[in-house]
Image 1 (cartoon, rainbow, N blue to C red):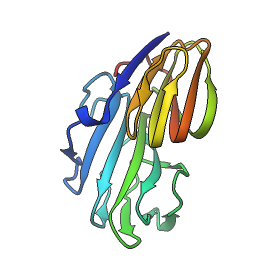
Image 2 (cartoon, helix red, strand yellow):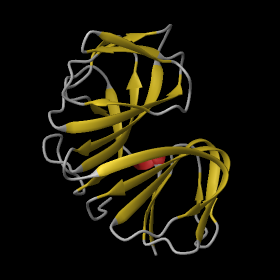
Image 3 (cartoon, rainbow, N blue to C red):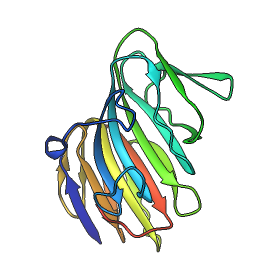
Length: 191
C-alpha cells in the first residue's frame, strides 16, 4: 500500500481556466498536469460570483457542493439545482455551462476525468469504510468536514486534507465528519 498525504495548507489558489474564480488542485495525473493535458484532476473551487464555467472538451465532471447556499447550473437548455451539500452531480465538461448562485459564495469539490482514458466515482462517506484493493485503481480520500484517520497507516487528515492511496489491502478510513472517496480507474496514480 502506498499512501501520500496531501495537506490543504500546501495548495496554492490559482485562477480558473476562464478567470472566473479560484481553484486549489488536490491531485492530478500526471502530476502537475496543465488544464489541457490532465488524465484526471481533483480540486476544490471558491465560487464568489455567477458566470460561465470553463469548458473542457472530452472531459466528464462531477461537482459536489461543500459550503454555501448552492447554485443553479444551466447547460443544454436545462437548469439543474445543486443546493444540497455532499450530493455529487455529474455533467459533461464540454457543455456550455452557466452558474447562478443561490444567495452567496460557495465552495465546491470537483472531479474531472478525460473521457476514454479514466473514470471516476465519488462516494460520500461518514463513519468507517473499508478501502478496496483493486488493480489499476487509485483512491483519493478528501475530508470535507471534520477529520479522518487511516487506521492501518496512521495519518490524521483534517478539513480539506487528502490521502492518495494505491494498493490498499486491509486499510480502513475512519471518518469523524464527512469525506469524499474518489475511485479513479484507467490510469496510474501521480499526486
